Length: 79
Image 1 (tube, rainbow, N blue to C red):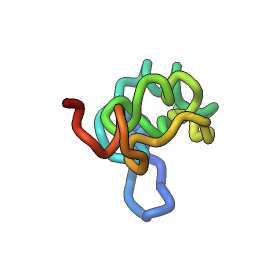
Image 2 (image 1 turned 180 degrees about the vertical axis):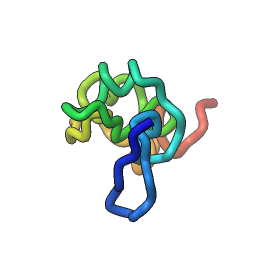
Image 3 (image 1 turned 60 degrees about the vertical axis):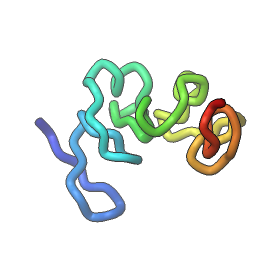
Image 4 (image 1 turned 30 degrees about the vertical axis):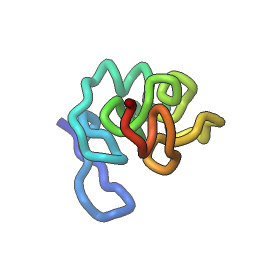
């Protein structure tokens, strides 16, 4: 396993989401991650709609972030 250093000074492996620290598979990082196979977001901290548009690769996407926006995928629970 290869470790890389994040901007927060902790070791992050290629099998770890750089945003929330959740475990991810190498395949997820290879498919959705950036050109160095690092996932900046994962299914634990983001929605599939955002991931499939590039949030896992570190891109800004037009769909609201579920951590900062209320609604269906964000701050409010579904009723």
